Image 1 (tube, rainbow, N blue to C red):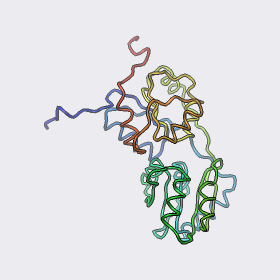
Image 2: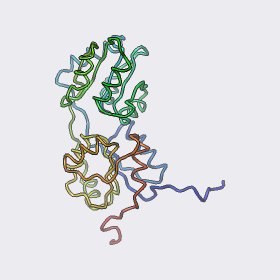
Image 3: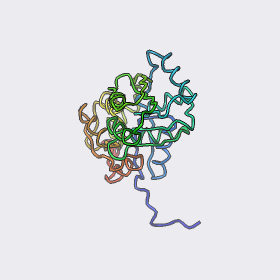
Image 4: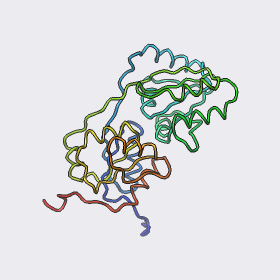
Length: 264
């Protein structure tokens, strides 16, 4: 077997914290390994059941029965909920996802994605694109977190659509191990991927001491804004709001070293 001497793995030697587990986290980890990095999967957030599970279960049953023309998802955590409930999305129902993280999470567990906003990857951007795409009234299920503002629901309803807004989950933080906390503080974790505002909050809360050399990469401008809002420094913002774009943003930096790396 002949090895291409020009084949370079841009993240060789890097240890990169992946803040979500499950199929999405596994997919990101595989991509990182292919580029030479050592992924450290450390889920920082998870979902807790909605306080009104009966309403959610009814909505998911209606979804499976084809009661909606569209279902919208604004976070990868919503996908975790669908997967946990083994929710069925029939071919007659189209799927809209805000952000490439959400879209990637959907495809990772076998759901299709019919629409991702072209430019404004936000609830408002999704609403604008759906309104342009669907001039006639449609039946739309919007799934959201308990703390999310119902921007999408309000705009779609104002445009004449029949919208059912359902709280799918509550976001909760997941404590990392002491070892990971130490590795972040010492700089042994060279980069941290930040994929949402909720992840940014947990990074700031759980890692109070992050070396200046650690690369903190946000998946897009909105996530970067949310990260800075909670006091988290952002080193890089992905030009394309995809996993590949996020990893490319990291690869533009030289590999930082832990402060005790050369002191055994």
